[in-house]
Length: 110
Length: 117
Image 1 (cartoon, rainbow over the protein chains, first blue to last red):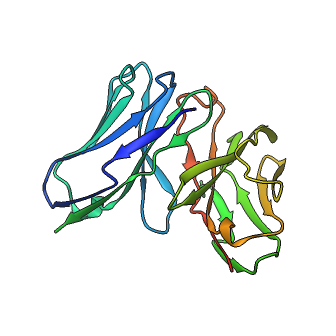
Image 2: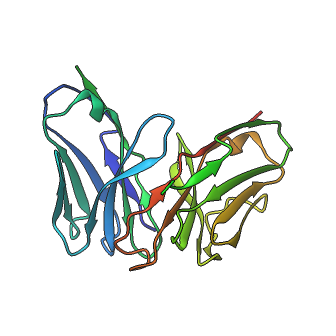
């Protein structure tokens, strides 16, 4: 059974700092990995999708990497801003639909 | 597009009452998912449909939970009778057919916040 783990569970950083969020999964037989953002009281917004054949995806200040063989992904946020404060979740698609980690709650302090 | 629409957004009900949550997926999407989110367990897949047909309901916790999708634009998740441990946020999500589950972004509604007292 696929399990997804995210470390750390919470993170607080000063504005402007570059940061890395980590995601690991137990079954490397995945089709893709997605990173989502969730604001309090809201649904999930997809940030980046990495196909299993890809190594990374970039969108603006966000860069996500995937190492399928080691079961790891990272989300890199450059020059963090207070507006980046949210919970970030990663999820993998394998033989079943999206399996989610529990997320990293990020606070960017102005 | 209006996105995935869920109702009600918030519901408080007494233990033993029936709860019905509703979802309208994005037009043209033929996969629909119901997830439940709690602090302890995170996001869990309850059931998903393809072309209105339930594909996998192994995540439905008990027989008290049931889901239907009578047509491509509507789905319900019902809890009868409800219990306090059912208190959670229930999300509906949809995605399009191309590539099936592979490589397609999934779109989430804003959730139905259920409290059973």
